[in-house]
Image 1 (cartoon, rainbow, N blue to C red):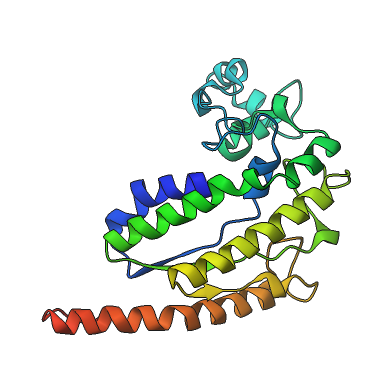
Image 2 (tube, rainbow, N blue to C red):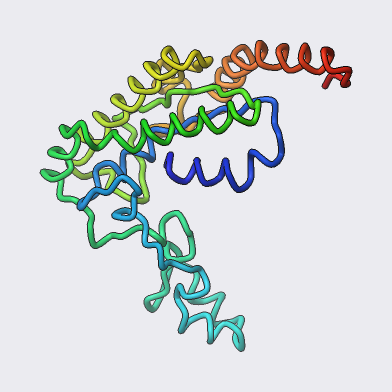
Length: 237
């Protein structure tokens, strides 16, 4: 989500001083936006107390003395062991606040649910600019008929609400790119079978399309970095 992207920027990306950063947020954002008891800090979606060392704790104690138990239990998630709990992105979700399809549709119609996404993108832009790092924004594809998810049941009635929010997020990204004067990589037009493996993950042909579009968007930022480096007597990269 954009909330987690902002944390990644501060903790891991900005200290590396890249020339630019490309952010492709918006699809996973829809899950938090549709979740019940919405909060702008996404605490309604993520359990802040989640720690990997506590997941499947009883089984992990057994695994310390029996690799055979580990081999048996983790194949097919037997006897109450949950691989989902071992994946921080899925294990930390507050599934008790999963919306019903009707609640998800109502949330999709609430403009306030986009508030945090916009605020996080604006914060990304401001913090990168303060560090002299360029920003490229990107929309996301969404092939609705091939929706695949570890959060919502792909065969459920949620799909229209998710698709609505993904498209709204893409529209917001386009508008912010214009307002903030940042390059835009528009990937939503690639929402077709020939480019995608499922609703949002690209096949090899799609990845080539993405790479070419991102290269075109990045070239002006790299050129500006080189000009700045020459102007200060530094070496180009």
